[in-house]
Length: 457
Image 1: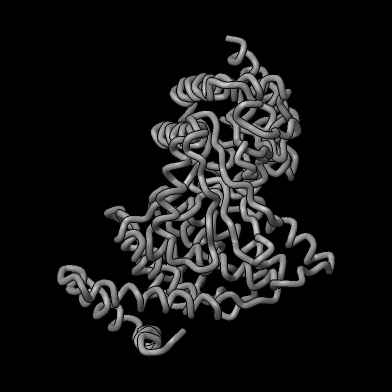
Image 2 (image 1 turned 120 degrees about the horizontal axis):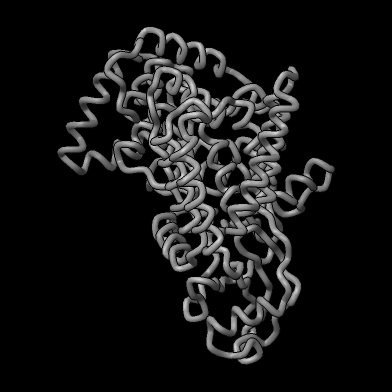
């Protein structure tokens, strides 16, 4: 009841703000900021809601989506007495018997959890991630309130009806459920480790399963520096002596493309603070509370869509779009093709500061959404991941033409997918049919594809 009152008070404050400022020319930008600040004050459920809304231009105008990208997943530090009590309750033993030493001050604190550095009795250094007490109860209560509010006012907010809002609320709940159950994160890490074992430059922290529960996650402590710090240092003229920051970001770019478009899995919350570069230059990915998955068909569709971006070829982009979606019965194909063609022309030869892969994907989806063409949830997650990587490249080199690099990466993956499919007759037949259709529509681009098939890229 108290939580309902707290939320209602914030809603009244937003309505009052709207009443006072709705006629001002910059109202939407100011109101978006006000809502984002309110979400951050209300805590994890609403922070996640803001992050999800930032990926849905079909739900809200762009100015709100852009503002919600700034939702901060941070939180106050919990007293150590509460941390001690939670760990001892979970492990059934005193802190001193489990750990040789345990730093009382956290090394990170977010809205859902906080992380402490510790040393086991075996003298191994570990990171201990702890779920905030009662956060699951808070989330469950918030979701219940949001469901009821959506049933009442869902048809009056944004550009979609209540059924879409209810679907979004359920998606938020599903993601928060994953991120507040460390057994699921352990399963995610093991899955990614298995799928990405052949990636040379990417690795993952080891898990201490015997000390981990649904509320506590004990991982190998990674010595190194976050990519966030590296990029800041780079911009200030401070460079590491044993590796290139630019090379690390491009290694990350290629690894994410490999994992997603070949293996089907990707880190769905990949930002510079979750990426550590060890002193030996190895990249370590952290925080696997949320991962995305593409099935084989969606993988192929996204690859063809992005190849259309890389080669500024509207036919490939259109084909990828059709493979990705269930199109409405009545849509204007000529108008859609014209808009995608214009997008491809804008991307051709553009600097990353003008247009990137992630931006192309987001703008392409926005064009499709205007034609009532919906994309599966994993595509929105993937767009956010690619935008984050593009942002890292932009900070390092705003004059970089990503298109040239992307062509080589996508062609190599397309070639390797062809080789893989040659071993399966049904896949080979489907591949032949798709390739023949694409050759007829985009002979110049496909000529490059088949030329690259015999080249080492």
